Length: 323
Image (cartoon, rainbow, N blue to C red; front, side):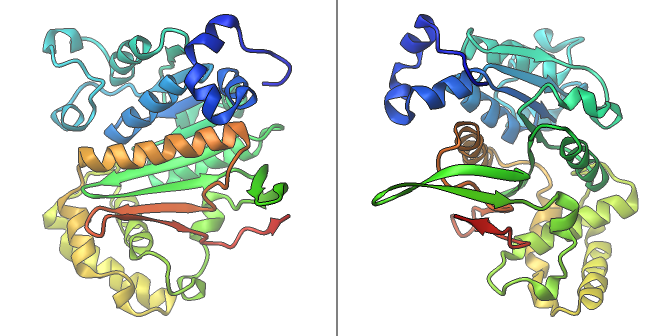
């Protein structure tokens, strides 16, 4: 991404953005390559934002056909059913995204992301995944970590009015603004496996209850062999039993994972479009900050619950910050 200047066309198109975050940040964006997997509503919002921001290329992976659930949350899918025939979600979203910004190269990759070799991910600067099982999150994260270059990894999930973003930037250097100028900082990130392996009793009291609830849901879907989101109210007794078992194993009070919160996540496994817009917007801002190396990034996790109307940034495994 270094050593290449913006073209006259790029400078004219992104003039307003350049005034906000500078030509160097825009240059980095225009040379960046992003991979996304799982075209859910939250990912559609994210893709729209980074395409408008002017990334270099965006590659979409999702071989699923259009479903009623997808139509309810993904605004990139055309309302004309005849257009959707024979096309995957990724292909439909690709066509729509190209219209937002013709200067961004938007393409589709077919296949199972988990089966692709590490060399495939070496083509990208940022990898964002959704609709993924617990095992797949761990696998893709580890593939990104094994590369010779740093690839930023994000795993995102949205259920009803709640959502979560996991961030792994590995060893990340950035400029932090201060009153007397800017200071160079370094963050060391844990992997997804390392982050969720921290004993619950060791976590600060202020950690979002959504963190624990999402881990319970993940474990339930994994144990039952379910795809992400394949859960319903009939599963609630089994989910509550698993919560009790996990709390006992982790030596924490069951109040860490309220039954009412788990019930909401089980009943509302589908996405809530307004929440998709908030979390997708947050994810877009975070990726732009990381590509431009400007601004404080999310440490490990970002949580949002529309019932309290605010987001929470959590440092689950205490990355070491060096200034």
